[in-house]
Image 1 (cartoon, rainbow, N blue to C red):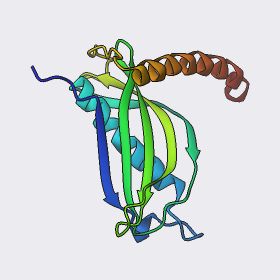
Image 2 (image 1 turned 60 degrees about the vertical axis):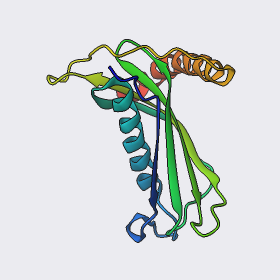
Image 3 (image 1 turned 30 degrees about the vertical axis):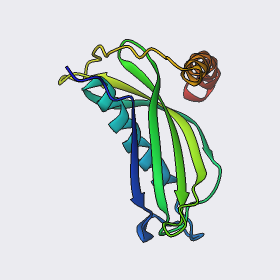
Length: 158
């Protein structure tokens, strides 16, 4: 069996249909790219079809312009029984200069499912480097914080 793929990078050019009324790539297009990269990463790790369970902490740091070369980097930073926490970073640059700058970052949780849509077990990811361990621990802290936020959010769904 092949070793699961922990990370993936999608690269493409920002197109005119991705632009908002302000002339920059709109956030919805960036979120779509993030979801696509998260799926590719999760499917590569699990070897299964995966669905998005959560997307959060998204920060739009810098705008993306039409014609920019966009890179969406995704990597597994924590696994559960069927879930994968994926850290994502979006960078963009003028393709002539290749001066990359961070535009967006966030965390997405994907869940591997079988042909009936039921959760299915995935391989465990074990951090090896100091940076991996730091991200792994941070993902665990964020998971606890999301539980608290979820409890607070109940007021809006009742």
